[in-house]
Amino acid sequence: MKKQILSLLVAAMSMTAAAEVNYQVVPLPQKIEIEPGGKFFTLVQGLTVGYPADNALMKRNAEFAEEYFGFLPKTADKKGADVSLTLGLKSDNPDAYVITVGKKGINIQGASESGVFYGLQTLRKSIMNEQGEVRLPFATVSAEPRFAYRGTELDCARHFFPVSFVKKFIDILALHGINRFHWHLTDDQGWRFEVKALPELAEKASVRPHTIIGRNVGLADPSNAIFDDTPETGYYTQQELRDVVRYAAERFITIVPEIDLPGHMVAALSVYPELGCTGGPYEVWCTWGIADDVLCAGNPKTLEFLKTVYGELCDVFPGELIHIGGDESPRVRWKSCPKCQAKMKELGLEKEAQLQTYINKEMESFLQKRGRQIIGWDETLEGGLSEKAAVMSWRGYEGGKAAAKLHHHVVMTPTSHCYIDYYQLKNTNAQPLAIGGYLPLSKVYSMEPVPADLTDEEAQYIMGAQCNLWTEYVVSPDHAEYMLLPRLAAMSEVQWLQPEAKNYEQFLGRLEGLKGCYKKLGYKYCTGNE
Image 1 (cartoon, rainbow, N blue to C red):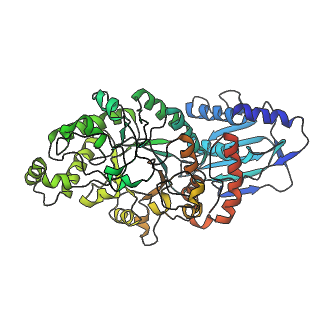
Image 2 (cartoon, helix red, strand yellow):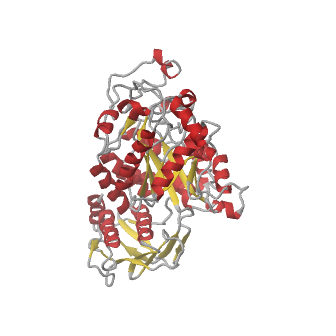
Image 3 (cartoon, rainbow, N blue to C red):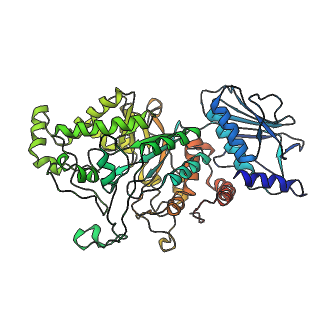
């Protein structure tokens, strides 16, 4: 990309055509004030970028400016630079920024280092498609996101994606102003997280001998399933994971890792069958759906296993939130398991569902001692949660509303608006295979994360929104990018803009410019808009 921008600037020296930018990008800045008089700042070779001394994050921002635009970091001093990166913007929102273009050059000021980074992204998207001499009108451009939590999920358990693509995925998130990467690392179909105390776990549970083909009859009747002959393998070492954490942090993205419990654990049970209620044998699942086999809630070794796994997870991922899953966990095995029934009697529980609450609270206490907070799917509400636990509402809005009323922080991610593993065009035959459903760009854009029937106090607990890319049917990086884009653009405006600032028709016009950026960056995307 750096070479591309440098080439653009070189070409500008010999071309007479001039391109005037308008700063109308996605997500749309809250204010774009063009100074009257037709004055411009022209981008040429050799522009320098200054930044505050002794600030490693701002130095990295200056390096991004060099990568994006060819600007040259001059010194660790903003004085005398053509482009200045500064702090000190007065705002309660740390991600706020103001871009000022005037006769002295360009200044990008942030309320924090992340705000400066988002200002750079706005400037980057403003000029990326321009040809010839690039002229920036004297202007003031400012924005701050509506929500503190702006997330996107990628499932690497069903299909494994290499570190190189995960980093590319993070780059795509950064381009759209996303600041949380929810990373789904384990499931019935594969375990992708290295646990050093349990080396066989990832080595064996990451291997799926084959995978069900399409949505064939085997989903309803496993005895008639048709499989491919391609093993699905791969897991992330802790060294690789730490490298990804660093890469994301440089782009002001915090990773929220997910290891599901007590369900979605068949891959783990295939290595440690004693942790299941029946004792197995178990095999890594090669089909999709919900498995009846879950961790045995009455076996004390289950909590030992979980604390070992989550302890190492905390060592790798420094973010406050740890996702414990908690969804789609049948209790059928617990009903007939002597150990689980004995545990219920010991704890004075009346329903098997309360066993999941018992596990959740044990793990929550364990994680709190490490300075972490749990977040789980809305099923975790069923048995009650502690005051600080957060909820992801995926089965519609009701779970999120109930959680907010109980003063739990909530991320809204209902299937109706946020599940981008669904088809995005009506003509399903013209698209790669998807899990089903239909979620067009317009539906994503229409999402309102804060239900109207919450009180002002309750609404404060809606901390953001997130789209989810599950990968049962997403088998390659190109496929994943296609499912993600441009729906992520619509989600970014949901996350950044106030409801009254959203306008779908205007968004479509600005989206064409963003698609030009996708082309320049080599991203795969759906060309249709519905």
